[in-house]
Amino acid sequence: MSRKRRQYSPEFKSKIAIAAIRGDKTAAELAAQHELHPAQINTWKRELLENASELFDKSKSASKAQSDIKAENDELYRQIGKLKVERDFLAERSAQLGLLPEKPW
Image (cartoon, rainbow, N blue to C red; front, side):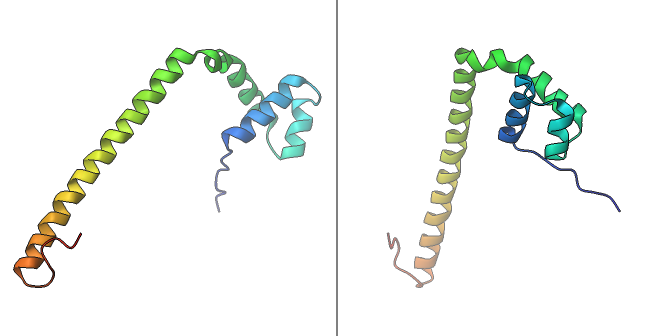
C-alpha cells in the first residue's frame, strides 16, 4: 500500500524556510513540529536563499507577468470568437427549423 505524496503550498514552504533562516529553532525542531524531514527544510531554505534576488528584479518578473496575461487574454478572445460563431450558427439553424426566432438576444 503506497502513501500519497504530500504537496505543500508556496506560502507554507516560505514560512518554514524563513523560520529556518531566522535560526530560532533548528531544522530538526521545525521538522518535528511540522512533520517534515529536516533535509526538506534545508532544501527549501537553500532555494529561498538562491532565488531571493529574483524577488527584487522587477524587469524580468513584470515582463513575464505581462506576457502571461497577454497570452491568457489572447486565448480567451479566441474562445469567445469560437463560441460566437457556434451560437450564431445554432440560432440560424434553429430559426430555419422554426424552433426559435432568428436572434433572440
